[in-house]
Length: 267
Image (cartoon, rainbow, N blue to C red; front, side, top):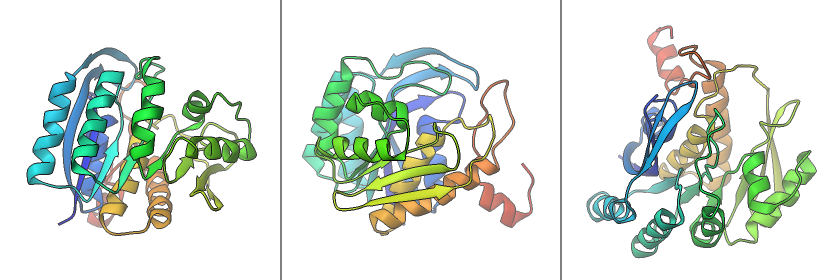
């Protein structure tokens, strides 16, 4: 059994964060473990409260996992403060995982800021150089680079800029643009444009968390990075297409849509 670790915030609504990550790992046949960085009070409509876990406790969770259950891949999501980021960096340095996926979570689907302004530089300085791949959407790529991004060519330039911070690959997600959903993959040598149909649905809560966790799960299963990214894009496309219309706001994607299909179950 392959193992994967998520270092992220908890979503009480169950659609994003730790909850989405663990569901994604399970859907891929990977055993999931968690380090909780923050507890959020949220649902499909809003984030109404956020409380950070102490940096020391974040580090101790990392230590506990690695000393007994060393993961084959690590996904990092919500790390809201510079002090938490430093604790995560400390854990990564101490235990040295090679396959680290960073989803630079900054704003919730409902528009709530999940990364403090002074933590952006810490994220760039402390975490990006320790990661295999970083997966920003367009607003996150803008925040990381200070660039205007209005098309795929801009996404490629942003990927180059993000690479200069020390990570080994970048996926800039194009979901915020119009037309087909085009993501840009850059490994420092060449660009790949990954296209999929655009699915018009309000139920997209947890898409970024799920996509990055699917990359981590596929890396844990031994797939190369580019293959892991392609498979993760196929998975998130299916999860959105089969998303759940629950709650009064942006409902969650369906992490187990393929398992439900095979079992003959309806959502």
